[in-house]
Length: 228
Image (tube, rainbow, N blue to C red; front, top):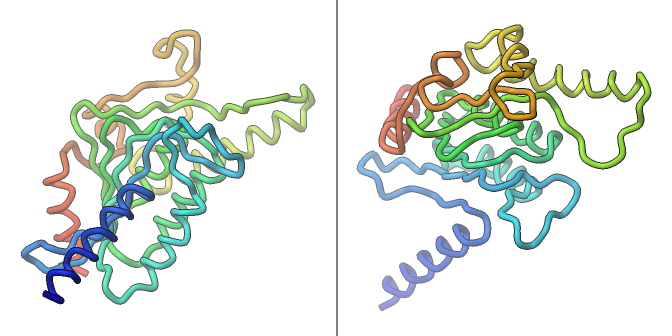
């Protein structure tokens, strides 16, 4: 009776974590390896709260969880699933830096899309996958609100842009020059600047490692854990 109650409490806790934070620990596999599933969905929320109707990933939830994963004796690997339109640049880079500095093996999987600041997060893991219909939008930094038309503003834009391109090019196989060329492409996005890459294209350009779904992503993560 007590075992049944414990199991029910555990399932209720797991359901609550999925509902509130989009996170869960995968631990019923045959290898008996504990894997933390982290989902990056909707818009990545930074210092400003977004509308309550928006699907968001809050970085103040993600960063402490990543710290807890690094400190955990039980968690052996991390699977990052992305379906995001992008969002706050500082928050996205903070998440990407945290993921890339984990000592545990990490794998990412791009599902519907990993656009804008979602790109650094997708490449921050040890290995990355994208489904055949998954998309990645590569474009220059954008800002909302009032922009002061002075040289210092454009220097600041360039500084942020360099941080993003530097991080991405150092965590995957695309060169910084080629990445910047994709960002400045004018013939792909209607009335905008940038490039849309679909599935295999992201692999061809060296941004993502392999085309594949959840089966390959989990299999690869188990392999990395075994090797470690």
